[in-house]
Image (tube, rainbow, N blue to C red; front, side):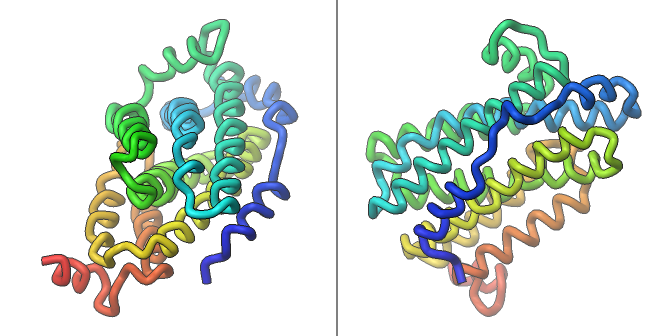
Amino acid sequence: MIAAPRHFAALATRLRWDPEALDLAADAAAWQALDGALRRQLTVLLAGFCVAEHRVAGELAPFAPTARDPVTAAVFTAQRADEQRHDRVFDRIAELILGAPGQDASSRRDFVRGIVPAPLLDLFEERLPQTALALALGRADLLEGVSLYHLILEGVVLSAGQRALLVALGDGTLPNLRHAIQLVERDERWHVGFGLRCVLELRPDPTIVVTLMAEGEAAVQAWGPAIPVEIRRRVLAQHRRRLAAIGLLPAGGIHAAVGRAG
């Protein structure tokens, strides 16, 4: 069962954390000693999150006014506060660990943008803002916004990035950085669960699964080679399970959904 909105409102309150309390100094000192290939992979992933979390923090505002009830609206607002914390912690990571130059967060983001794969920039700097604006102007509905934001961007793209980071940091060399990623990933899990609840309540045509699967398969490639193939497979398998959990996958699986859509 997918929990009700009040459950997510309680989680949002209980799971709050302070991005300023994370001590990254020792991790920053250990950064240069990492294997070169590992450091390059981590650099792409961390730079991508620096850009992505800033954009999601800024583009969630139109969601609450379109919610069907006050509790759902409050959860969207709480999620936005989470995203602002994520934005802050990844800015600290960009400054202290990646060594991004600049006197402010905007300057540091400008620097790391040059590291981020173009497909990722397109998703978070083009498609997400366009969808959020359309939602704000009444040209898109909440289902379209949640499908992109929660199921594809958070549920596939960011989930793949978090998994890759946690695996790459699994040897304990950068423990506080890994802890920061774990905190972000914990937040994102309930965000995606809340998105599934929203989709369930919006009662979409089941053939939407064809689009959601195709978009998930394309979006998981956005990180390029920074995401190992096995992690991509696991993230897509989880994406399918989530769609099944809210009844979007028929008994015959995705092939039956394709046939139904045709």
